[in-house]
Image 1 (cartoon, rainbow, N blue to C red):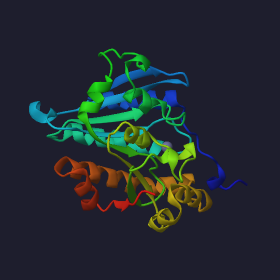
Image 2 (image 1 turned 45 degrees about the vertical axis):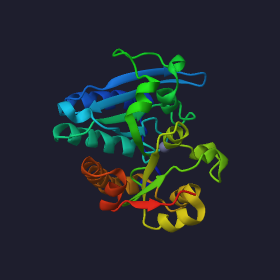
Image 3 (image 1 turned 30 degrees about the vertical axis):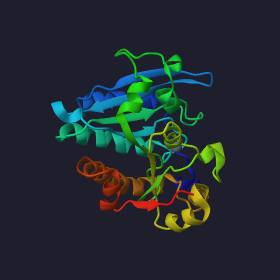
Image 4 (image 1 turned 90 degrees about the horizontal axis):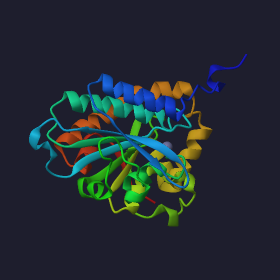
Length: 265
Ligand SMILES: [Zn+2]
């Protein structure tokens, strides 16, 4: 008999998950905008939802948070997508004073083509029904970007600020480049939020993101059972973080909600 832990659960395709995200957001009363893109590597569709309850709420830099929805594992990145749908709902039904944008990226697993297209100059953008997302508009309003990638690995949330071009660092393997790195390259401060057991703190200090990834594969953290166990805590933590970021600066919100801030190596 095959143990349940050995059965790889069904991972939805990008198209299936995109339809789910759009339908879910609409059912919550939100109006997601689709941003189709085509580059020489791939084509796809980012799903963008803006939330701004008050008339004067758009003042100041936008709070931008995103997760890629093309998945290769449950924790990478279905878990994050589910967390951000919930965050969108709570912001929409709350009384946010800020302009929020939540983006579900396509084609992250293909050299981050979705976020590259979002930030690229007009030529690679095909315009959405509402006129598309302009490069200058993105840079003007997106004060800081929070990239959620890796939810359902463990009970703790970790944050690493991208402070260097990782293509020149120890993490030169493109597998470990994320949408957060794309924002950093465009001059927008960005943070990568991921989950894991507390031991990731030491592993990260020693071996970086690659070390955490190897630990994840070696310690049965990538199983369906573990994902299902960790997800409620991850969802709770992301909700708390978003609520705190509504009131505080991002750094204060991370501190306030117990997210473990890592020194980027
Ligand atoms: Zn990912």
